[in-house]
Amino acid sequence: MPKSRLTRRRLLAAAAPLAAAPLVGRFALDEGAGAAGVRHAGHAASGHAAMIGETVPAVGGPHDLDELLYPPPALPYQPGRVREYRLVARDVELEIAPGVFFPAWTYNGTVPGPVIRATEDDLLRVRFLNAGSHPHTIHFHGIHPAGMDGVFEIVGPGEELTYEFPAKPYGMHLYHCHATPLKKHIHKGLYGAFIIDPPEPRPPAQELVMVMNGYDTDGDGSNNFYTVNGRSFYYAKHPIRVSRSQTVRIYLANLTEFDLVNSFHLHADFFRYYPTGSVMQCQGQRGILEIEFSNTGTFMFHAHQSEFAELGWMGYFNVVD
Ligand code: CU
Ligand code: CU
Image (cartoon, rainbow, N blue to C red; front, top):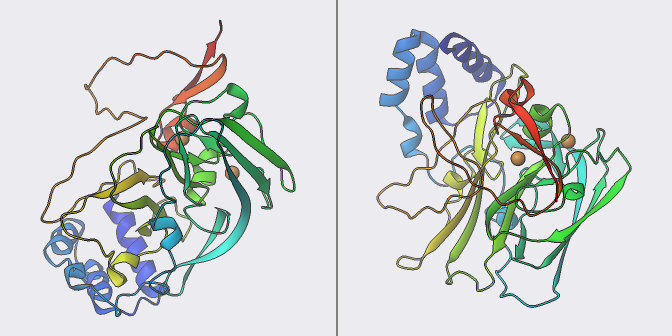
């Protein structure tokens, strides 16, 4: 609701030492205006257009997030190849904006977690150690046997589990913890990008990974900060260098909790888009889904708004031969 948003912003303005002028200006606008006025003023005076370069209030140096932005290279299919990753769940206090800390639950110490990449039909082997304070799992989007789904096989603190399955189908996927309460485990930061390449890799491109997320830093159930790859305004402070006329390929995933949608918009150019995985429908919208199940076992289906899933929009397929 607009009212609680105002309160939240006011709180933020007081609590967060975001010294940069554009932000302060925006909070000040919000302060005085009524609910309708805020939206108007915020839109008209969106000072972030001027935010570029070193003065932007973002945490860290120019290469801090390289491992999250630049995926490992695509490899052509080769029979029998094993792709191994090791993920360790850890509780970490992350500075997501200058002076703003978030008590994250992470895979390997970052939010999002590391980029996992394999070629279709590589054997993916992910060793998962839970060094955190809560039970966790890794649930991969994509095709895999029931016992590798990360829903029922809960890994307690100090425990370990190895996920192993042939990577498929090719496309842009993601992984996240599927322990309950789901909303909390996702919002805390347990997710990352999962790229599966076609047997013959896509044409060469400048490849980037962008995982969109949000952080609720005051515990009121709505986000106070939004980022790609984990830090507020990071790519405003450190613009991503790309070459003109060479394809830029962005592997994009949305892990924003609390808000039902997020979006990616590019200025001054257009892009081609290849969606995978989930579908969205507004009321009255409809379509036909056809599936050939690859494995037997019990598989969950649910709205990918965690809140909807937890409030009833969740069920299982029991797949038999
Ligand atoms: Cu978890
Ligand atoms: Cu999911």
